[in-house]
Amino acid sequence: MQTPANLADIAVLGAGSWGTALAIQLARAGRGARLWARNPAHVEALVRERCNRRYLPEAPFPDGLQPTASLQAAVDGVADVLLAVPSDAFRQLLTQLKPLLPAAMRLCWATKGFELDSGKLPNEVAHEVLGPGRSVAVLSGPTFAREVGAGLPTAMTIASSEVDYAERLARDLSSSSFRAYTSTDITGVEVGGAVKNVLAIGAGLCDGLGFGANTRVALITRGLTEMTRLGVALGARRETFMGLAGLGDLVLTCTDDHSRNRRFGLALARGASVEQALADIGQIVEGYHAARALRRVALRERVVMPIAEGIHGVLYERLPADQLVRGMMMRPIKPEFD
Image (cartoon, rainbow, N blue to C red; front, side, top):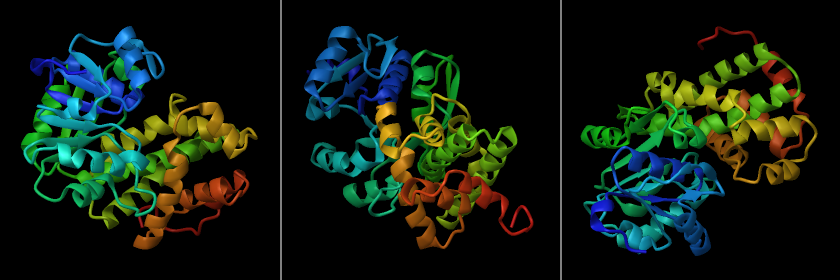
């Protein structure tokens, strides 16, 4: 479906809960948005019902949001393209987009996680597929799609090496209920988004086993140390991990049951198999696959991440869940900030 040019400011690619919420927020803030989904039947429902009944049923579409099933129509004439797809679909979608994107078209994404096979961050994948010279940015931070769709007060981070681009996107997204901050540390923001989903599974495991608030806070705090350690090894700035895309997103995902990753850990602790827990949640649990990619990256970079390693063991080596906490408690005594 072709959208009038005056509504074609930005294309949001991916009509899951997060892509839908971002498209709603952009339109709500006064920027026209095209929302692309691969499935024509899904798009027909979006057009007919003017909401995403499958993923975000309580958030009606503003007038400036127009769904489409055509990738060409979605990106034709827009100034910016925003990808909101899972990390395992990111490279494929970029490859589809490449012949459709003029050199001047800016690209941003809300995709989180290391690529499973290569261990690359999304910005590395984008550079590899599209080449250098394009303005790019990443959106991340403590945000649940349902709350953004409902218009509840929210803050997030937009990172780009081009300060002007990050500031423009921040202005486009910001409204009376949404505040975007800017950063130039793309690597740090992406590492935060990649690691927090894995740690949230660990938080769910701990809470499901009844270990209590002390254990949860210890996991979050030491998990933040592991996240920072890996990020710095990859070239990120340490202070990024004390902000919205690091500590903020980690606390949100580890402590609230809107988090699919946390719910997955809870289900495992209560005796469900991995397959049962994934099926019961019914949506992608990105931390499950991210745990494998994270372990590979940590080994490659020779970064010690005992909590992430323990979560990987529970998920893929069928280690008892309580071993995660016991392993954390039995670590050698050392200074906290070594």
